[in-house]
Length: 158
Picture 1 (cartoon, helix red, strand yellow):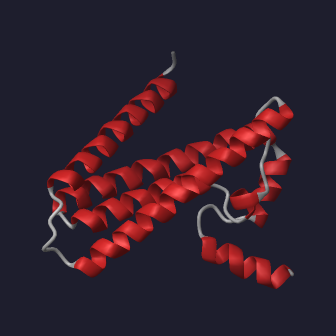
Picture 2 (picture 1 turned 90 degrees about the vertical axis):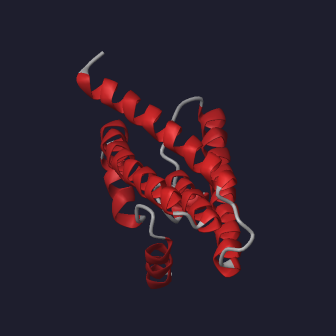
């Protein structure tokens, strides 16, 4: 095992551990007397992120079953943003932070989002090596995680 793969595995372990802490602390620090509008917004963001995660995961599994190998997906959510699963996780994290409204969860959430940003960059490098020029074209057509940039781009082209 090389140094890069060890750090990658350690990053995943740190991410998973922080995610578990975020969920546990959201339950522990849940208080009905907090700012309810933020709490309800948090539930909306959490549910949206969960739906995005499930939808993106299904798209990936469907493409894998149809092609028998990992392929570049450009349809569904992947036609709007390149990393819908990462965005789904980010939304879930933000939702949990808004639900708990506690400083510990805010700090854990920031740490998790930072780890996701690093992982997204690594994923970009892997995909460029794996899919070559097709991925570079895809990068020019579809934004990384900014849904609003994608909609704007879509309106300009058609």
